[in-house]
Image 1 (tube, helix red, strand yellow):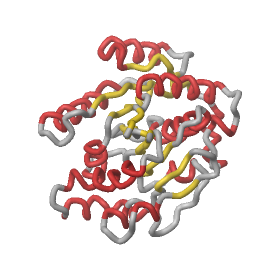
Image 2 (cartoon, rainbow, N blue to C red; image 1 turned 180 degrees about the horizontal axis):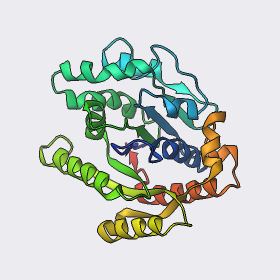
Image 3 (cartoon, rainbow, N blue to C red; image 1 turned 90 degrees about the vertical axis):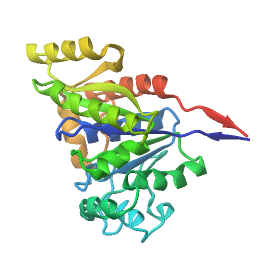
Image 4 (spheres, one colour; image 1 turned 90 degrees about the horizontal axis):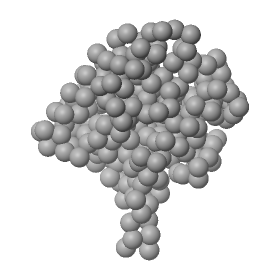
Amino acid sequence: MSTRSTRVIAIANQKGGVGKTTTVVNLAAALSQMQKTVLVIDLDPQANATSGLGLQRQPGLSLYPVLTGAADVADIIQATPYEGINIIPSELDLAGAEIEIARQENHLAVVRNVLDRVLTAGVFDYVLMDCPPSLGILMTSSLAAADGIVVTMQCEYYAMEGLSVITSLIDQLRANGVNPDLQLEGILMTMFDGRTRLAADVVSEVRAHFAEKVYDTVIPRNVRISEAPSFGQPVIFYDPSSRGAEAYRAFAAEFARRTAPAVRTS
């Protein structure tokens, strides 16, 4: 019998406003169009991935009650309006998860322990975690549970500075044995404005430092990308022919080639 071997990918950057959540919802959408099954985990109390996939915030419907033992993860997973995409939503109470996790023994393993229950079922090809824009315990424990990290980077002057913080954290999690196999899957450049020299210079600098780790696809600034969340839709469904949708489909194809889940035979 064959079952899926799920790839767990954290989409992360400790800075906000760099296209992280937009990338999560559109990567999920594009993968679903490639006949992949995806679970999105919204770990940001702002719940933008939740609303961006057409759901409303609901009290008690997030990873928070699972982390505190008040709910089972199977009861929290929700269907979205989009076939092939499920979500563990977020809510404002998730902001309190940092304190709850810190109280637990071996707190860096708490997200991993929750995910183990999901992975055992073998239902999903990918789990995409929308990490909070901070370096707190919730983000760190999420990275401790991931197979790999995709870092989104806005094409701006201070981009490299933020990236060095993430790579240092990856090195720490590997070195201390928390997640020795954690990989930097890739770096996605976002909000690229082809009219400016700065954007091109930033992309060139990041490629010079990280070479093949930088995805070939660059996500442009595009008004349709900005509009889509207010309609509760990924841009891939909101305006499939837009430059933003085309870019995210190209990125998803590139991402899938690099991270294709293996198939276990038992």
